Image (cartoon, rainbow, N blue to C red; front, side):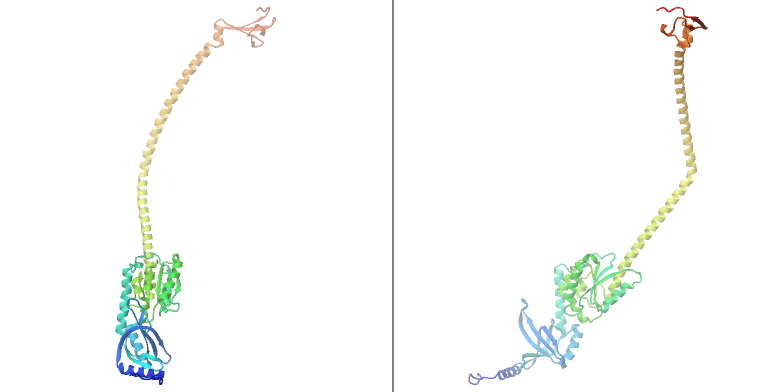
Length: 419
C-alpha cells in the first residue's frame, strides 16, 4: 500500500522515520560484520566515529561502505582491549570483525552502532598480510640480498635512521662513544618517524638520502628503542622491506622488540634486539679486527725474533769458523802469491837474458864500428883545430893538422892541396 500522495506528500522527516522503524523492525538483532577501517576519528567526548568499507578482492574497488560509531562507554573498554590483544591500536587500515546493531536516524541517516569486537580476526588478517609480504619478497628473490653483502671489516662510518628524540638513539650513541676499547665511530642521523603511518615513507626517504652519499658510509643502522609492541606492524610493509633488502649497504636493525620479529628484521643484514645491542655488535666487530691485527702484529714480531735468533746462530757459527777459514784463506793466498812471484822472477830472468843478448849484439856492432878498430885497420883521422877533416875544403895550405893512427898521433903542416 503506497502511503502519501501528490496531494498529501510526506515530509522528509516522516519518510526517514518510517525507514528507521522499518530498519528497527527488520534488523532487530546484533550482527557480526567484517570490513576494513578506512577512517577512525576520536572525539573530545570520548566517542569514536569510523568508516567501514569492503573492497572487491580482485580489483580492490569499493563495493560497500557504512558509517559507524563507538560510543564512549563502549570505546573506553574496547580500545585498550583491542590494543592488548592485537598489539595494534584501533586505527585505519585494519581489517576487523565488529558486532554491530543497525540503526537509522532521521537526521544522520544509516549508521552502525559498534557493540563489540573480535581481536582474533584482526590478528589473523595481520599475520596473513605479513606472510603475503614475506612470500612476495621470497618469490621475487630479494629477501636475502642484504644478508649477502659482506660486512665491513671496520664499521666506523654509521648512517643512523631514527627519530632524534628516541631514547634508543641516545642509548646507541652513548654506547658507541663510551666503549671501553677507545674505538672511534662517526655517526650521522638521518631522521625519520619511528611510529605511526608515516614510518614507511620516512624510512625510505632516509635511505634515499643515504644513497646520495653512499661512499661515506659503511653500514646503516635503523633503531627505534622503547615504544609499544603495538607499533611493530609499521615495519612489516612490502615497500619498506623491499627497499631495505636491495639497499647496497648492510643494514642493522635494533627496533626494540625481543620477542617479535618484523619483516624489516627478516630482510636486514643483521638483527639486534635493542639499539644498545646494535651498538655492541659494531663494537664487537671492531674488537675482532683489533684482535686480528694484534695477532698479526705479534706474529710479525715472533717471526722477526725467530729470524734474528736463526741469524744469530748462523753468525756465531760463522765466527767460530772464521779463524780456520782465515788461516786457510791466507795460506791459499800465500801459495798463490809465491806462485805469482816465481812467475814474475822467471819472466824477469827471461826478459833480462833477452836484453843481455841484444846488448851483446849491439856491443859487437859498436866494437866493430869503433874508431880504434878502424885505425887498427890502417885508417887515420885528421883534425884541424880539433875538427875532423872530411874534405879538402876543411884545410888550407899552411894549416897545422894532427893525425890519429893506431898506437898514437902525430902533427904535420899542410904544404900543398891536390884534387
